[in-house]
Each structure stands twice: as C-alpha cells, then as structure tokens.
Image 1 (cartoon, rainbow, N blue to C red):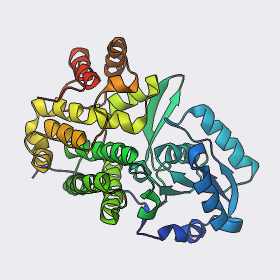
Image 2 (cartoon, rainbow, N blue to C red):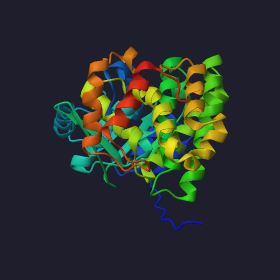
Image 3 (cartoon, helix red, strand yellow):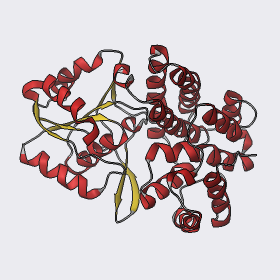
Length: 351
C-alpha cells in the first residue's frame, strides 16, 4: 500500500428527515444569537419560513445569492450583515447560497449553519470559488468550511427532476476526481465510491418517481459523501474546466459539471485507466463512457452547445484552462483540452 496522509474535516453533520426543526438549536450551539439568513431570490419564501422558525435568533434575510459567487454580491451581503449586527450565517439553498455564506465567513470569521436543498455538496468543503471581472478563482482554508450542516431530505422533495439530475452529477464529479487525487487516501476513496454508488442507485429512482423517499434519502447521503471527498483532496482537470467555463461564460453551474464529467474522466482514463478502474466497475465498461451512458439515461444535458457556448469560444476556454492548470495525472496541453471541449460541445460519447 502506498503511503498517505489523511486529514478529516471537523464539520458537524445533522442528517435525517425533519432535522430542519433543529436549526434554532444549532444556531445556539454555535454560540450565536443574531443570524443573517441567506438565499437566492427564487428561494426567498423558503428562507422566510426558516427565519420565522428561528424567531428572535433571526436578525435579517438577504436573498441576493447568485451563481459563481460574484464579489459585488458578497460586498452587499457583508453590508447587510454588519448593518443588523449579525453574528452568524444560516444559508438555505444550493451552491449559490452556500458560496455566499462561505465568502462572508472568509472575510469576517462568522460561523456558518448550512441547510442544502440540492445535491451540489459544496457545504462539505473548505473551498470557495468567487467571480470578479469574468474570472473565477478558488481558494481553500479552515475559515471557509461551514461549522454545521443540516441534511434534511424533506427539503429536496420539491427539487425538479432536471436539477436533481444535474446537481447529482455535479456531486459525482467531486467523487470521481477524488478517486485519482494525488493527495487522496483509502478513506476518501471508500467515501468516493460509496457516494458514486449512492447516486447511481438514487438518481434513476428520482427520475422515475420524484416522490421516491428512498431515492431522495440516498441522493442526500451521496451529496454529503461526495462533498466531503472534494473537501479533503485537491481538484483536477474537471473542476478547472468547470470553473473556467462557468466564470468566463456565466454558465449554469450544475449543467456544466454534468456535461463535462464523462469527458474529463475519459480524458484521465486514456492515460491512467487503472486509477479509474473502480469507477468503471460501477458504471460498466469504461468509466468515461459509462458515466456518459448513465447521464443520457437520466435525460441529463449532454452538449455545451445547448448552454449557448459557441464553437468559436472553445479556443479561448482551452487557453484559459491551461494558463494556470490544476494538478492532473495526465499532463494538460492546449491541444488536448481543446479536443476535450470539442467533444463536450458536440455531446459526443467518449470512446
């Protein structure tokens, strides 16, 4: 067995149906008494219900969270936080809301309670991606990791099929990259494969019946596992490309992950098939092709072209992605990344 170093995230995880009711107790457990509740504009109603349940613990509500965590939005949220004298953050929603909470905490050290309503998994990571002037940059640190996460599957029952599928594939990308991470460990590998298995079984059940409780529970469980893997290991080519395209072209985050996943995994698999053999066994045949077939069976988006990306933009995206690349077991060069993007743009099944 190869030598490894394993570092675990110190987050508190509260999992189970009905656990949203413990939000007030969890705020008190953080030693806080004036929470700023965060949401997107679309989830304001849900945030208002949560704020009402917090009673006097709720200081105010900020509903301006948006994709890719723009710095100007963070500055407005910071002003709201300071204006009401808040001492903690309660974020309810998907990756956009979680990202905003992290951005605030990274600047003022406020403790965070995150209540995810999608499967993105970012609530389990000490990673923050922010966008400014069309460029998305990422950083990590202990001050970014939320202290407490409430995973209540009841909150995902209204998640539309499309978003359930794309956010699930988004989370699966965390685990798939974690399997071959250079700073991985046997524990993270086990978590990654269990997370992938959970989504492999849960997403088809949700597509067939959105009210399938077992499927919803399994997807939330998978989201925690996959997010925890991303929080513990370094990112590679998949996340680099998603951050590049998402930040530069303002693409929908989950859809971008869903489309690129089979192609980025196939890209690594070409030169390091042994690193992804365990993923291939979960999805049959080869890992990249198996993930593509899985996504297609769910009705997931398959083409960057359908997100409005033009073929002429691919050259620039390949240039940006290779200018400051993340570590990869396969060396990254502009030509090979451009070819990968071409296949993802056209939606071609990986060979």
